[in-house]
Image 1 (cartoon, helix red, strand yellow):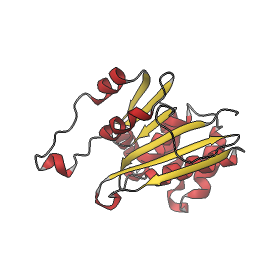
Image 2 (tube, helix red, strand yellow; image 1 turned 30 degrees about the vertical axis):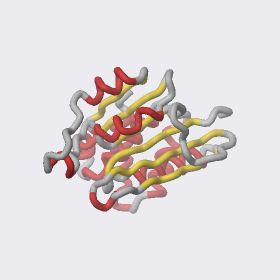
Image 3 (tube, helix red, strand yellow; image 1 turned 120 degrees about the horizontal axis):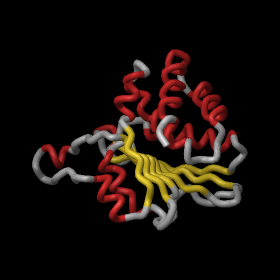
Image 4 (cartoon, one colour; image 1 turned 60 degrees about the vertical axis):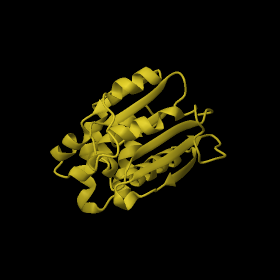
Length: 194
């Protein structure tokens, strides 16, 4: 892969954003690509915004995705997808969003409003394919709601140049033994969304 591929993974603290970016990085490295990632934790322990940049290709010089160059945004929460769309490239980008609304404190105390029609807003602002996935509901089918991040990785894997067997090997090596099967199931469920 000559081109550097740019991914932004976003959400709020506790959703598994950093785990997902670590898994993606391991898959890219296992596939022989140079890989860089960067994380911004923010107020992650209080449900604040968390974002990770992951870049991979033959040679990657910086871990940060530049504005206007992002190929894919994977968002674990609806409004967090909207927060990062200015990073998307003009043509051919993808946005994968968990169909989940986590109301921030500023909204719950009346200082702000939660954005409405987020998917429509994204489609109006950028020419990107938007895929809305009920990842949290799907994760519940695995018996472990915490696998929503792996469901989303499964959906994202359809748009990346890595074989499913590499993903499954990395998942098997990365999770605790008692959670491997649920995460593999979640990944496979996610791959059904294209």
